[in-house]
Length: 406
Ligand SMILES: Nc1nc2c(ncn2[C@@H]2O[C@H](COP(=O)(O)OP(=O)(O)OP(=O)(O)O)[C@@H](O)[C@H]2O)c(=O)[nH]1
Ligand SMILES: [Mg+2]
Image 1 (cartoon, rainbow, N blue to C red):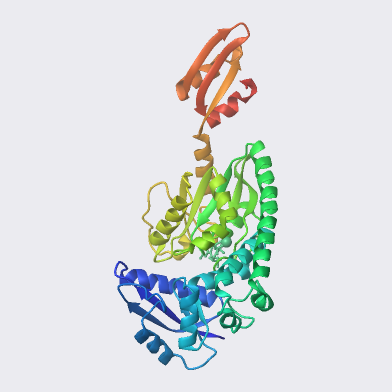
Image 2 (image 1 turned 120 degrees about the vertical axis):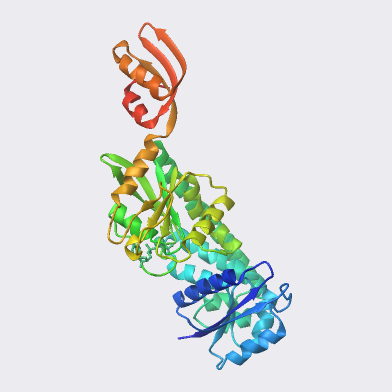
């Protein structure tokens, strides 16, 4: 197993805790990629060293920790092509960064056509500026980490061919996207609401997704078990159906290049009528993870209503203190799962819709229900009934459906 040393820079605005949390996460990512972390090094500095990211003294210290050419060093940030080249020369072992590690994990997890294309695109875009002069550095890693996806032979092809490949992939992704767009439109026409599971990686989204939809979805105690969006029908209450989509997990410090690469997944989130934010209640950093997910959602311009679902309560001793609306469940033991459907059903029942109706005179009980529960904008008594324009709750709209006019 390849051994790795982790290296991070602590800038003045960063607390010890923040840097340690990031390193702990980088360690998880490294182990998920099959590496063994043997040590970690942090340098406190006022700023990034342009050519080498960290200072020369610290580079020497890392050199001292290395005992073989087979080991690697991973930096907890995205290195520039020049920094990566210089560090590789000075340390004499392969140097990776956080982005490369995440790309590698994505490459192994991608299952859908779209997911695979997106990962390859992101990998090629990452490689392109690193090809001249540093191509050799990267290919030194062999068939292992950092070279999966595009593959070793492609790494050695010239930039023009890589650009061509990027253009081809972009065209391909456009057509995949168009198909998905059509599927989405078809779904919209049925007026079935779409609920999306979002949450930090490993929170239990896929486990919950399959528990709720009773489908066998790949769930593993590995980061990023899901890369392509999955959608299934879910019966939230008797005869009441919604679409549920599973999405890729969020992580802190998700490189911006990757946010772009996974936009299709995020589009599913943007199109949703309601988000279920799945949280790992047993994780010590659950509130930080919650904030990180909320921040990414804000970043992509998502203001969809959210219901928080604290998962893995089977692993928590003692009571959880959350807001009263937050759900507490276990996707694994299926404890309290029915509460999710109930709350989602309640949410949709309380959604308002604007509609026009022609109510026959023998249905005036419904007219008073509209007055009590909704807001009436127009009410005209005609020969064949009452012409009504009102904003009412969706549940009431169901009862009035037969009298709807467009
Ligand atoms: N104890 C316990 N473990 C759970 C529960 N839900 C999920 N897990 C475990 O947590 C791990 C991650 O679950 P996943 O469903 O793959 O998590 P995810 O959020 O889909 O992860 P990504 O797709 O990587 O973002 C798996 O080992 C699950 O078995 C739960 O309620 N209790
Ligand atoms: Mg998953």
